[in-house]
Image 1 (cartoon, one colour):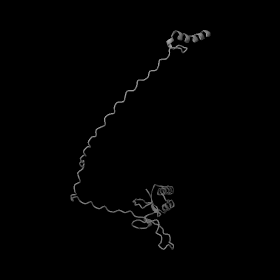
Image 2 (cartoon, rainbow, N blue to C red):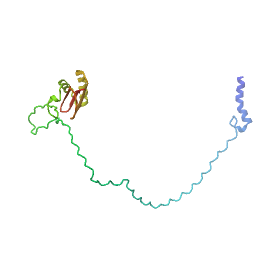
Image 3 (cartoon, rainbow, N blue to C red):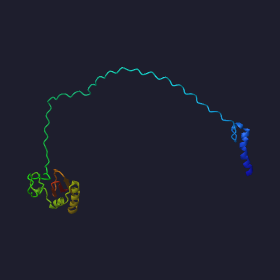
Image 4 (cartoon, rainbow, N blue to C red):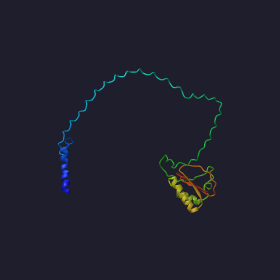
Length: 195
């Protein structure tokens, strides 16, 4: 069986080449291939277009009219606005005193105190010495760091609800509290009061 299949596979190409010579056959001896067609030559290029005629320049556009009319002159009948009162916050003294002109001698240390506008003394600015000690202990060069440290220690030692305000510059305030203190340094002032 295998032998007959082998002969069948071998003989089929020969018979197709012999019986059908135009089909190309199995032996490669079919009709010669037809010569390839050459493409037709390309059409000639069209002549170039004539040059464009020069147009005369356009006349300039007229100026646009103004969208808004000019404002009318003041009539002088409107009342003058009153001057606003000037408001000035208290200023802290400069952090450093100017050096002496002679460059010699010693200066005694000065203590910075915060006083109210009425200048009634320290008792009007602090009625709780424990809060004052906490403020002085926790002062820092950064106001937000001082504020957080003072608030944490006041709540831990005194309990209750406290508000802490710290500033590197002067500030003004008004509050009704029975437990408060303002203290600070040349660079920073903090105000603590219980609510």
